[in-house]
Length: 110
Image (spheres, one colour):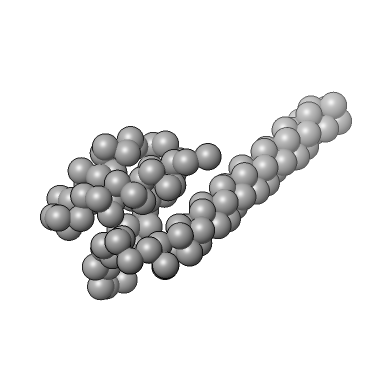
């Protein structure tokens, strides 16, 4: 029977521990970003609640709302530009250019 040196086992254990710490850090940063995004969405909802000039995007179904949430998250995280966000929005909801533009401006404002 071949014996594995203790030093090799310790090294493997260290590598596993490092991987676990890295994974935990990634999960924490993802959760933090999600909560930051959710906070920003909440701020936007409050912002438009009392704005009679804002034309509400008619997100009628759950899939519409999920689509909007994902698209908004992409512009918030700078994965797409404001222009791409507006273009995608008006493709699905023609005539809502100003609404999508306002969402993009608010979500990318620091």
